[in-house]
Image 1: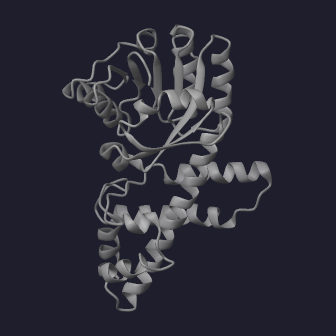
Image 2: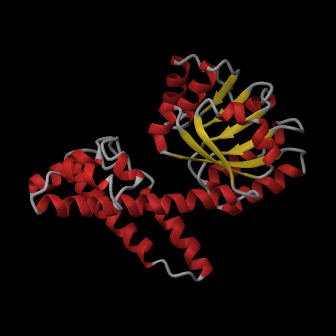
Image 3: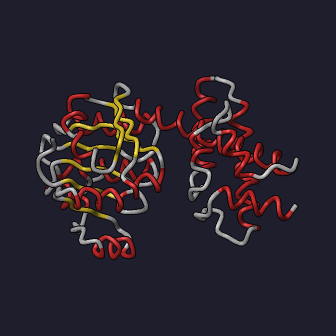
Length: 289
């Protein structure tokens, strides 16, 4: 079990629910986010805030980094006023953000010089999983540290797996994202086909869950399905495939199909990154056609 205050950098749609779960479980939590609106939302949930990343790092035993991009992770961890510069030896950095394996490894190398450990702790099951406390954490790095912090992660994650050396958690998240969006596009096209042939979407979906068409995205088809990172997820997959000279034609096609889905969602009269379920969206698409 982790001892001491837990820091969370990035209190957005993932980080703030995680902070809330930790606080309700009795952990001491301190957050940081540069956005004034986000800070107000955190204070409304009684989440204590640091005035800077450095202040947070100095006051905590470990930090969960839940920011959006590789550059932000590097700045938060390795900047002149970042975690590594401010934290005491023995501090642990968990990279919860989805970044390249090389970014995790770079941060790990920089941190090791200061006596700080770095682990991947990438998160699957999205914002709904964060709110419900049902995330999957794909960990990588020192397994003994991941095990020592298992009680902390259990506050917001129902499953924690260790995949290997630092960077492997990012590989796991990348592969998961590929499968998620392949399933999402496949479900969208399959259910539209069935409806066009005269079968009720819900009756068809229920039957498919008992057959080979069952998949996690189909099981959660009624849930909100925001898609803000979908193209980025697939672009990361394609970049890795290009580097490895590995043909992934389906991944490239899915990336383009996602663009079309989001254009149609915009025509629906909603934000393309909105929270309406894919079930409702498919019903609307077929009604329009």
